[in-house]
Length: 164
Image 1 (cartoon, one colour):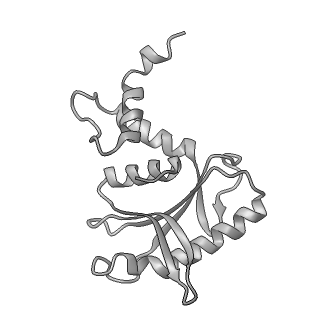
Image 2 (cartoon, helix red, strand yellow; image 1 turned 45 degrees about the vertical axis):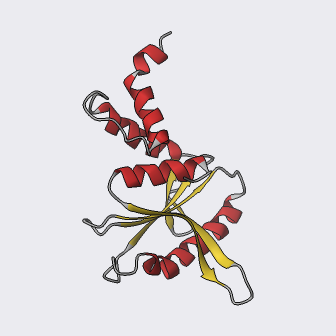
């Protein structure tokens, strides 16, 4: 389990959908020690062969600083992700790269550092829509997904929770 809420949310959502997940992966081991960078969430779906790299942040730094940081992380992802799933990848699978942010102007920017910019409200909307499609009595998010379970409970009882 990740200690960063956005990373945990993304990791749970992809794992819930059947992806193999790697979180907080240090890549690019340096000969003098340390690593080139850390990748927040990498997800691979074995049936669809879909490969996703999510970098999540709640920072409020300048767009210029974000652009540099995400570009570096996404370039490292392209370079190192294939070796994270040795034996599972055929080679050459495209990597969908997502910058998951809380503090950004929704809809203004579409890309960040070469990856698709997704506002957390878009991801939450997708998750809530999924859980709105059925009652909890029919299908519950498994216990290993506490964040998704909390969203499912909130979705199930939204009428009682948000009474005027």
